[in-house]
Amino acid sequence: MRTYSELFAVREFRSLFLANCAGIAAHTTSALALGSLTYAVTGSAALTALSMFGAPLAGVVGSLTLLSAADSLPPRRALTLAALVAAAGTAVQAVPGLPIWLRFAVIALVAYVGSITGGARWSLLNDILPAGGYVLARSTMNASVGVMQIAGFGTGGLLLVWFAPDQVFLIATVLRALAAAMTWFGLRERPARTGERATMARTMRVNRQLWADPRCRGLYLNLWLPSGIVVGCEALFLPYAGDRAGFLFAAGAAGMLAGDVVVGRFLSPETRRRSVLALRLLLPLPYLAFLLNPGLGPAMLLALAASVGFAASLPLQEWLVERCPPDARGQALGLQQNGMMTGQAVFAALAGLLADVLPTHWAVALLALLSLVVTLLLTSSLRHARPVPPPAAVIPVQPVSR
Image (tube, rainbow, N blue to C red):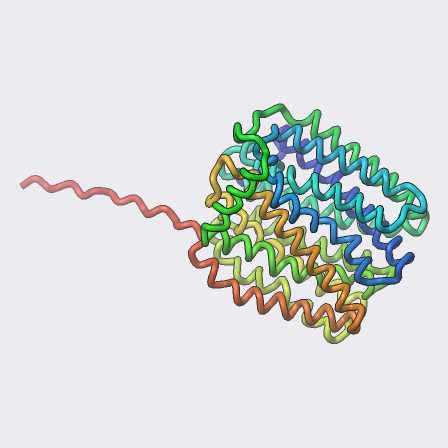
């Protein structure tokens, strides 16, 4: 499967794609509203970053408890459950005057449910598509994240000019409800990937098996840490640019979209493999220029260029799929997603703390330097994680009769 027309000819993929678009639009719109509300109430860059990017910290709890639900529940039910919980949580955020601590508690609950079911979405791609379709499908889903972040942050910024944050949450609730409906009615029922129940014991057993494999461990660390630190740079967009931060978020989303399209659609597997190092280095390098405190226009270009580097995750995820056991694929991909999102939340909080004691542009450059150092240190761990190409077929030489 190499073309978008082939991909979107699959009805179930269309439904999964549209549901993902609606969910991301709801998330970005409500995150911007919550970040603006938190900053207005507290004036804290750290709490603002945590409100926008801190929800995935609940994924740590999910990864240690019921992450095996991604394989133990039928995927349609798992994804619909997560969408309904997210819709309810967004509706609660729309209650005027809700205390900040309660808003954070709602975020944590929604994130926990999403963390234990999210792996079902990515493992489902292998079930609804022909062999070899995963990278194109995953890059297309990632591209939808970029597009909907551009639309969500841009539209969210405009909505916050016209409406109060509580009203913006209501709009996001409608989008969450649409995502739940498209998931339930657009996917067919499938059995769970494993007959075992979702228990903490199974979750921890599979986690230990995955982490004990040095190839999987190297892939996880490379997928979690460098990009997570760079998201810390993005978490400072609001303190850096104020009410113009939406333009920086949109530029970053555009760069992510461009990287996913090019790497997922136009690069061959071998070219993807060779591009991993360049993409990983591209991710932190542009943010070093924030040390010069660039204006909005140059900062947008830097954010766009850096975000192309997020596409390094596509070949790394492709290698992870090949390494993990088929009956635990949902948990393996869920662990990757939760670890990545948790790293983003941790470094977003760290970024906020740095920006509370340092000039914001210094904090961005310092995080970029940290990401670059971590990237270089982890490069050697990928040497044995790459799939070994199948040996070329040897044609036996027939003896010549004399």
